[in-house]
Image 1 (cartoon, helix red, strand yellow):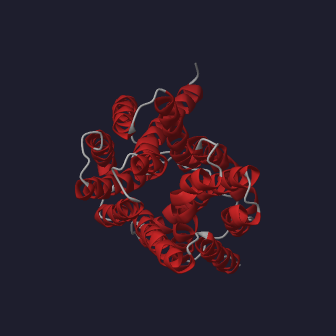
Image 2 (tube, rainbow, N blue to C red):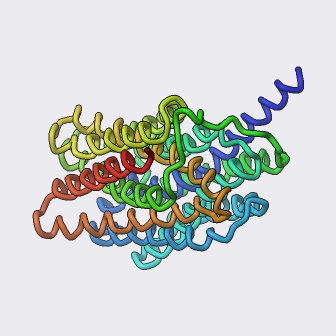
Length: 382
């Protein structure tokens, strides 16, 4: 094997290990709740209100974790990856032994902290310490992998007749196994001094940091209502369909999308890629209103799942490049505003539901936010 081949294999292994950190912290620790809480409501462990509070607590924890992570330097990213992974697994296991609402809400808040830590630490480790910005699609595909894998594990457990506590235990133990493999892989990697192949200068210019931050905040608000309520919407509208399968499609759509949007970004530049991504995402958000059938929900899961991590795949490497010029942790700052958007989203949805007794108005509001972000992205790069 040549030196170049060894380097290529090592680079791929590093990216896969970082993606597993993302899968655990985000896919398992964060988004699995979307598929489990309908079971918890059916079992009487949570009410719809307390489930919404737990979701909001998770988003608040995500925001707090992002604020905490602003000071993390790339040379410390491995240790924060360990903390995020172990913390996430423990939170999942704890949910298997708790049925007090206030404690569940606290655990979900804590899990949000670890999710933000996983997002930022894995990004810093791979993009900055390992100098592998070209592996961003693999890294962020880890979120979709985690969503899809956790959803299918939940479907497996449900088919065996397991209740929510057993499902949480299954997710927690699986996280420990995957996390151990990932952390061993990260520990064996060495910091690299590789010159990255950046996007063609003829196709892209860096947007202003303020515009990118605003776009990212609106994106966080725009996708979160679908990401929070999609299984519940499916369960109510189409009771004969297993909502976990639709949620798995959401995650599966995110995996190849990272590579597609990375390619489009490379070929067409930030403005075209980001505006196309956000516009398509807006269509996916309102599809359940336009087409309230199994096909409509399926296409919504594919479109939103196939774009929301694409937004991250486009924006985070750009943020990293801006940060190198401004010498700040823009990745963490953007994670903070994304978290703010995700907190405001469910609060807005609850307020609108109280007035209109339907989530349709919330989906329209979310799509509007994404369209505004689309317009800003068209103006942010000349």
